[in-house]
Length: 174
Image (cartoon, rainbow, N blue to C red):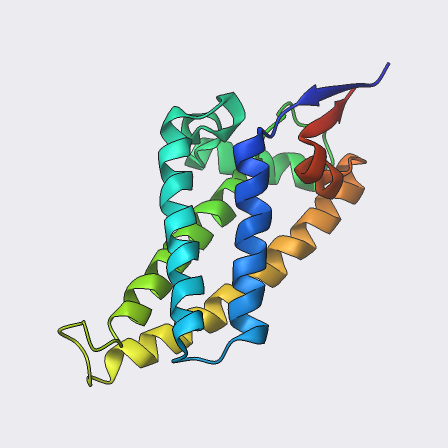
């Protein structure tokens, strides 16, 4: 018998899709150096900071303690994938957790390196902030592509609608 369990709370879902929108806006619709580009970037950083806080005080599956990617969890997840065994988790799997932390780090790095290019920064007119920022944009694009691919693959492997769950908050459980 299949039932749906509430996994992703409203904050996690709104955060996720708002961040998707902000990242898409800065990658495809704003020009670097524009004021709107800066504000969109700072908004993404603010969202990530809120998500970090929520990772400590939020609902069960939003808490970092529920999915922190320990070496033991990563090994168990990889072994289960290779053996095509069903894993017992509702929230993020270990590789998904690694992706979350990588995305958080890159977005915070983008915010810092973006700010470091502004006139308010003591690093203004230095070359490294722009070089770091451009590198992190590329890393972010790669991570986003891997994230989307992983969601598709894991949806097929687990026979679950992971994208739908990020809209409704509910995941199917057998």
